[in-house]
Image (tube, rainbow, N blue to C red; front, top):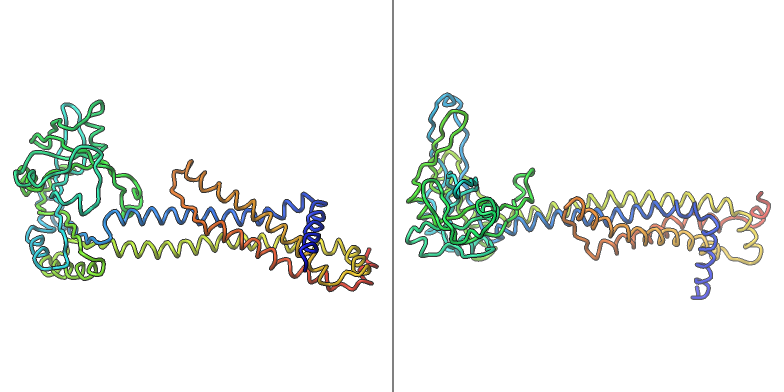
Length: 424
């Protein structure tokens, strides 16, 4: 088919559709909604999975995280007013891991302290953590201002701390906390730095994606010397005493290939020394692989749902075109009588179908690109529009025009010219 012939077919097709503007517009709506839903759903799914993967990467893809887990309480001890629980990771575990595995690059312990934090009359309730200076290097955390804990602070068991941005806001709403004194428990500490927020992992579905800003860090040696081994928690008239050496150990592995080896070895070692199962091993690399697999399945499901709506739009186009063929039976007969071949009739009706689907697809791309922007602005959800999404959606809409236009066009071309001319 020549270029001029195709151009004439397109012009005739558009003119024919313009004779029934309302019907043509309603027909394209199905394709419009289908195309826009494909783009919007893929953007929302991509954004959700990207956010989850960013949270996991923030833990370090080459890290292995060991955590203390409190064993289940014995119900027979429920009436005791004072309970003492000794569980979790120990300094001996830390040294065993350091000495046993050559693939370990850095190892960072964390100890959680149950202490009240205040400045004058203002009180904050942050998560107080004692750790070593290499924590920042291993976790990739950032500082807003000031400095991090130093090796000298650790050696001297200095009374210095780094606070999260929310702690700084609560205790020092009108001034900078740097260089100021705060009281942790019964000890005074100097604030030397403010830590940037980090995103909460998706292990708590209700709070996943929130920024964590209510943290306070001090040297591990200071935490041990100033606050001892025992942590006291008051609960419903009873007093819980917990003895936990370390609440978390972050192990940085030299290469990704050794992550699984180190994780399995650490788990085996801990199982040997912790019969009550008071620990857990978290491998961010595994979580990342799981998140990527979930993303793939999620995108397939969302794409399938949106694809069904496109399919429904295509069926709507075919319905309308079949009705159009019946209405234009005499026109088809006249064209055939004047010398039009069957392929001319096929081309005419196929062009009309493609114009409908391409028009709906183009409008759907515009709407589909606008929906994620609106969702991000009003619903505060992260969305990611990949170049492939609008291209794929538009291509499918054009393909639907061809596929669902073939049968009506074939049916029109198969009409007998004599019978068509007799049609009333």
